[in-house]
Image (cartoon, rainbow, N blue to C red; front, side, top):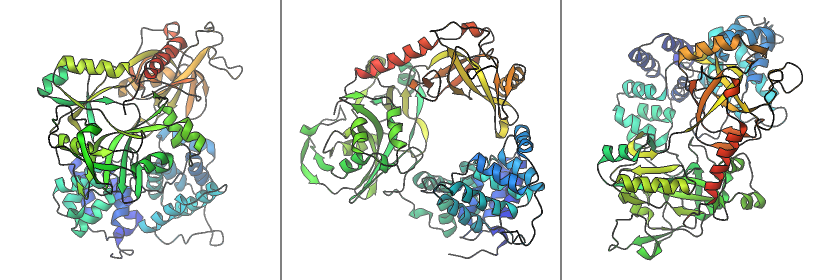
Length: 615
């Protein structure tokens, strides 16, 4: 590996100059040219780090490292090295909206540091490798003093930064880069900088998910060595959405594979030799949370499909396979992890309880049992199979026999008419699932791509009318606007008393309103500007980055499902909320009651309890 520690490009200041140039141009081609000019001259030591930082990342996707530096740690660092107080910084935060701009202003006001109390040699310019090493040190910190130790490391870096360098250092740390150098643009720049086919760069990115490694392999001219292999998590193939069977039949005009859409966690299962690992949708290793699944996967048996078996129904049961062929096949599977007990599904958030625990006890395993429903395969017996047709991949899955009910194969069948799809959809909904997924049987597996090879058939989302009770300032492009809204519904067990609602006296400032959650997507910029002006006119209390307001603005909010939640006074939360409309025509008295939320939840729960999974 080349050592470029003294190369100009290895200095953080050069990266910062490039970032600022990228930020101020609106031309996509100019952004690409700026990135190409910068990364093409970097050595192998600095290139991966620079590409990560430009992409707004610190560690590669799926890395075991996590910085965990929060707002308070950054704030305290800036307070201690500047002449500002917390009121000054919060004012700048409200004006500019992102932590990077606060850091830029704070460092311009930083205190003079004498030779005797300086921890760092301030004359030395920061290098990319030095910053990355400090980030890894921060990520490895733990224990009761870890926040203080993180703060001290961060202070040491900030003391050596110019105001502009501080801005981008904090932007990287706080995941607020937002200069337009996203992965897609980086792929184009990498291909251009190292004279590679853009299709090959994109394919390598989809297979590895690591933009830094793709850049390094492109520089080394070894990009063709990128292939699917166990324990290198892939981006998942994604489905498009349609809302009617008629739309689907008209678009495809041929038979499709039909499967239930399950309400669980999308999961990759990687097995190689005597090791098995599980990867979530963000490509994080979550094997620790589901030990019974990894144990079951290690005991998979592989059988051959009888050649005489007709394939109208792709799912094959045990009578369709011959004697044991091998039990040492390596594979990568794609599927959905669901929680269920006594053949009945448990609420989705039960799975989340297991993810929040770092160790599993027998009581947790018995309290929240699981089933992994497999619907695709990407790697089988030393070769990648993503370019095989889906119907061929399904035949491979039919070879799998599992030791227990922890793993099962998704039921699949061909459908071609509106009636068949509609019947399947209603059956899925009646059994407590989200709908159907329709798949082109000739399609390849496209990691990371969303398209019409797979189609989700879902009903239009439910909606409720709720009132805004808290508004928070946004970040980045939404800086200075009130764009995040906490919503409430009426508690039907009491009368809504206008004298109580929004009262400044007592702890319960919302009276008979019960908070149901937050929503921040769905409105146009013009609507957000309107909301900001209106909300500022009805402030009850200013709490810095958020305001409590009189409950006057009613929003129509769509959502996926209702979940139980201890975080909100209603006892419930909306999953995937989205603002559909500002209801100018409605007042506080017109909002929905908690009774409606409870009814929606109970209906969901009742439907799901009727379901029995076929193993």
